[in-house]
Amino acid sequence: MTRLLPVTGPEDPAIQEAATLLRAGGLVAFPTETVYGLGADGLNPEAVAKIYAAKGRPATNPVILHVADAAAAQALVSHWPTEAQALAERFWPGPLTLVLPASERVPSIVRAGGPSVALRCPAHPVALALIRAADRPLAAPSANRSQHLSPTLARHVASSLGDAVDLILDAGPTAAGLESTILDLTGARPRILRPGPLGPAELATLVGPIELWEGAVRAGEVQAAPGMAERHYAPRARLELVAPGTGAHAVSGAVAYVGLGSLPPLPEGVRGILLPLDAEVVGARLYALLHELDDTGFERIFMERPPEDERWLAVRDRLRRASAKELP
Ligand code: AMP
Ligand code: MG
Image (cartoon, rainbow, N blue to C red; front, side, top):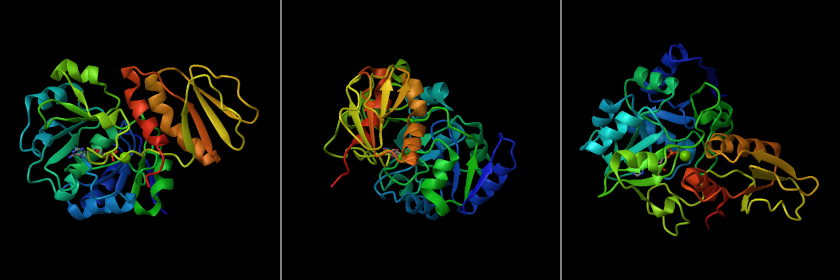
């Protein structure tokens, strides 16, 4: 059985133990402010290969390196533009990942063979303490099987990855609940590859106009950015997005209906779940709710489509992917 160690804060001795495992090439799942990450020594290709094996992650999907500060990030890139400096000063530690030209120090497997590297300084005190104790960048994608729901609780990690992990650090539920915003700084203009807790408007105040990679907001036919497969973040249950207030039609079986702001009348037997019409709260609770509905055995989940405005960008993106049909 995988060991699950509770951690109370950055001084907890469990962190030293986890760092020792990481330095020896092991896998340690740890909390960040977004979701739980599956960590390995980011400069050790064999250790990073274990992440891919544990997750069943395609080799074409690169991983994010987590660093303790901007200085550590600079040591991993061949060019650190002024935009990166400004964004790091303002938003690190925080849920922002920057894609930059990689230095030779970054192993090919981390970059999925490409020329760039994704870097983030997480805001969780346990994550920061772990990176410092390990004294190296940590590769850490979300700690779940590829394409499945991301973990917001330590036990989500245990049930998704089981024995593939050497140790899980348990610091309770994560705060933001959705994966970081990914901003690509390698092109002519900053471009969002994955919407997240930090929206384009907040980023634009520092770096000017920002492009949205269209696959990040719309259904894309092609996978134009690495790892941006259409179906992702998916529960076991079939998730369908519906117009607000439409109820769960004439369906039977184990069905849940998630309303935003209010609940319409529902057919008998359908479980109604009310979430507030608040993008941040829904973002924080979405994965935990989908995990819970899966664990309870719901076969179908109807969820009301969120509003079209920018505040809902990240939640809309995850819901669209989670409800996408299986690829052939
Ligand atoms: P996760 O598995 O949740 O940590 O997500 C990591 C995501 O970061 C990947 O799926 C990619 O979309 C993105 N990413 C990581 N490295 C790069 C890179 N060098 N260039 C572009 N996107 C990247
Ligand atoms: Mg993931």
